[in-house]
Image (cartoon, rainbow, N blue to C red; front, side):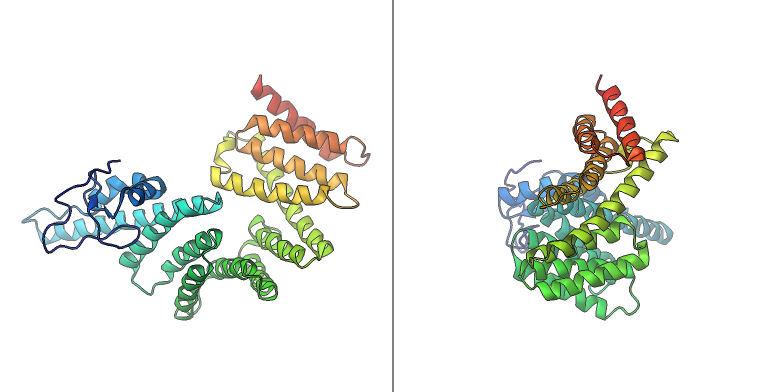
Length: 353
């Protein structure tokens, strides 16, 4: 990545705008030659977030059709360019989602902005395909405390969905989850609960009541109930989340033991970090209760051990496996869980030898 000022970046009469802030720009990426910045900080931020991954693709997208070609060749060129543009949209989408999942909200913004701009170009300014970009921009701004800007993006998402009758329940669950996050951040707990309840409804319609996707809505509901000083309600919701994740992780472990699937294929880095944060939050809540339940804590520690084993981090898997083993020592009716923990410890220790 180069941040050298290109004196030819702004030919007379041609206005170049910064990729991140849309202000007049004098810096140019010397690799793709199509991306401009107002200063080196914005160039570095964009490079870290998304530009490094899409710079060669931008060169290809902006390549003109060969001069003097046949109509069929020009049509083929346009078709291939559209395919590359859609690929660019997907890469930006995945990168923005990854940064948001890791709570690196500032890094998420350039990727999400690129996602939005190219989705507009490919699908049009009012297409439903823009909604995920609006939601990611809203989530990043909520994380950064820019709630008014987050509200603007969510208003655009809602307006787009109003113009799209019969949109998928997946998009509606994502919309209500993000609206719930915004209202919770604003201290509007009643409306936050309503949005999270809608999130759970739409997610369960698509993924089922016991899925880990739906359980994310339960987790967010529990957080609001804790803020309302209702720990018993929060505990019941946390239990649903813990049970869903434990069952899911056990299935993944069984699948790996019966096939040649590699653990790293089950979770990417962002998913692993996000799930770890959620399960640790529930475990800490359980351990701080007036009357903690060692069986519940053991199950959560076992879940964290399985998660890190599936993420190929055997050191953390061993750490949480030993914690689960210690928690279950005094329990007499947990033979199946005890055996699972024992097998996990053996697996983790074997890979650390």
